[in-house]
Amino acid sequence: MITKLKKLYSSLFQQVKNSNQTIRDVKANSAEVVWAHVFHDTIKGRKWLQELALSPGRMACNYSLLFVLTKILINCKPKRIIEFGLGETSKLISAFINNELSQSIHHIIEHDKEWISFFLDNHSLSQNSKIIECSLVVNNNASPHYSYNHLAEKITSDYDVYIIDGPFGSKQNSRLDIISIAERFNANDQFIIIFDDCQREGEKQTVAELIKVIEKRGITVHKGLYSGDKDQIVIATNKFRFITSL
Image (cartoon, rainbow, N blue to C red; front, side, top):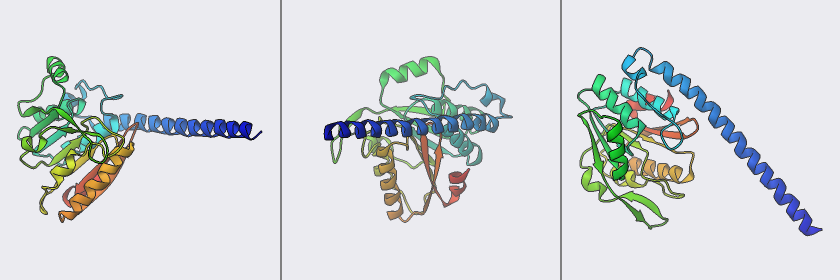
């Protein structure tokens, strides 16, 4: 009898768990549809942007990320941009440089040679966009996670915008490379960090640690959440505070 009850409770628990997951998926998908409309409204009046071939979803960026990045490029006009991971956002930033931000510099950290080759065979980037190939290593400190090999040697300057969408995520302490970069920030620095995939626990952990590191540097930052079928957390200094609540 006890065994039967345990099986029944286990079955009911699994049903509730699956139901909750389904509800979260429905909410996320509904939010993504809304963000798609908001994004397309945001780019009205820029024919070159409306004609840009973008393919969001699945492993690529989603519409909430496209929206917040577009608003940053339009309103903040960053001079120096770096992103971890080559993809749809690279195309968006490059198009802005070609059309509105001709003085801006755009660096892309990417580990996959084959993906770089495939991407460049099918898409062109601005002359001010540079792909920096950086292989991956597995770091086993605390918990296994991927890092870019010798990244600090390849990033020797500061940026206005940091987009964290690589390397591959991990269950804990995901995408920790930004921590060592933040440890070099100065109190007067003004910047925006967009951290993708923050619906996952590993990314949430890193964001929490990142904010601690930044604040220890004497920098006040503000945080905003954008949720579609994936979540982004935006961290901004006082100058760009408005970006956290668009």
